[in-house]
Length: 335
Image 1 (tube, rainbow, N blue to C red):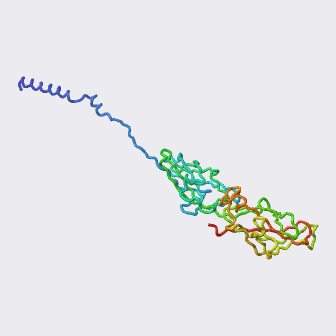
Image 2 (image 1 turned 60 degrees about the horizontal axis):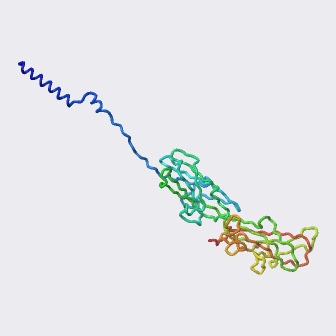
């Protein structure tokens, strides 16, 4: 190869190296080119309504259909049932859910919610196990008075998502308030005082009150024995007042001729005496009104009774005693 050819070849190599240096990045540039670009990944887990899975009254599971668990009331008193609920939340945050319980009487009807509930209370958390939370209600806000009408009651527990209150779940269940037929006569004791009697005339014997302390209308039947004086001042023979079906009757006012209920001569035969339509349930705790909101003297759940008696002479002076017995049963025509 001639010197001229070699020189030309060298010039081509130098030119090639020069041009390559213009387009091939340096090592530092190459390192910077292959570095990883790191950004922030974003996703969102939506809030879910806590599911009310189970509702309990006094630790008994309420049912989806009536009647559900039963509760016995306290005659003349107030019971405070305990309501609990079990929630499930896939977010695992049911522990901060907003939970309310609504209780409705059987006469309230549906829906049973904040607008129609007879009683309501906020529920508080008392136990959590991951997805499940147990809530309870303050039973002081949920009284069950003795006079509330028996039958199927509704209970609704509503739970709101802690992040988005528009996410909520309402679950309704049933429980039953059992029948309780109970009454007092006389109110305030066990002695029916007929007072002082005038012989050979009709007497309006003392005012004594009878009261319905249960949750159902009542039919009352009555019986009484002869009056006998056992004091030393009346040894006989005129120390007995015989009940003969015409001389002793019970009435809700002082007018004897106004449908007074006369006790039969046969002590085994009872008479019925109670207001038309049954002895009503009370309408409030002290029974100052009945279920139909009547007050004294028209209250048919808490009213006075008089025993009218005609005692023929001769009768020895002294204290005469007998046994007056009253028995109740459910008034079956109640609607």
